[in-house]
Image 1 (cartoon, helix red, strand yellow):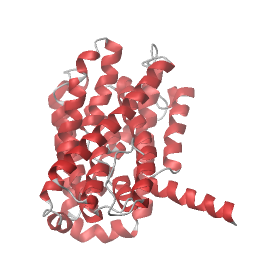
Image 2 (cartoon, one colour):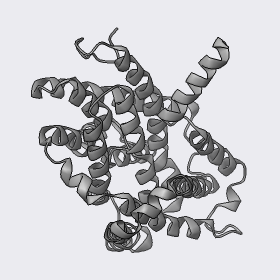
Image 3 (cartoon, rainbow, N blue to C red):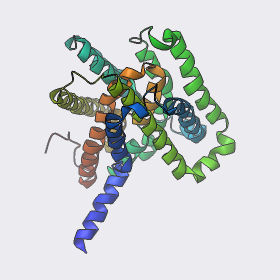
Length: 344
């Protein structure tokens, strides 16, 4: 029947866009952390924080295992598109946040700004970027390349940006953070890449269960982070209007970057497919890497939940807005000019 057919189409679109049980799970674990923070706090009865700590290495090992060196080499030819996407991801985003830093002068607002800057320093997301480019009929091979290389570069570039603002506080300071980063992130990625030729078929065969494992670890990290933040009262003093303002700022950031990428793509002279790829790969940020790397870069568990909040809001908004934009672009004739999502 037409109604059930429409429901199935909407459900399939939502699934492809990433609007699945994972997003609901994120909301759910935050609610659980608010109601019962003692179970996931550092001094809680269960060693959930320690499990999440080792889960970071598991995620990055399987990321390296799935990374194909041959595919990365094959995608190097379209270098102008790659420069635009990676420049937007690792330069434009952080510079925009640095430009507004003077506006955040109170201690309360500076912590939110740090979370926003952490979001800005992160790589592009892999799965949803590729899905959106596919829906909008963009350059899919280039999207796969850029999303993959962005994730790999982020392992190195994100900590470099964050080193500007990391303090010498908990867990031994910056030197200890760099050591933890090498052991928990860089080493597992390197081992995974080295074992790709032997074990990549295993990773492909069990792609579904491994994806669920990734999501379970991320949910655990988010849960323990917010448990500690709620237990320590970090969110006290932040009103509903503060959270609404943060959401509006994240939405404005998305459209600002989207507009900059669109303008730059026209100046460079990209065709329609490359422009679409630049738009979606350049404007999205990875919740996966942001969550797992936060365990290393922000050892103070009390503030981790608040620092992750801008990323989680941006992640939800980028999926909702990008899915609408992707559908609109897919309906347009190829000869029509590409326009901003704010134009009709």
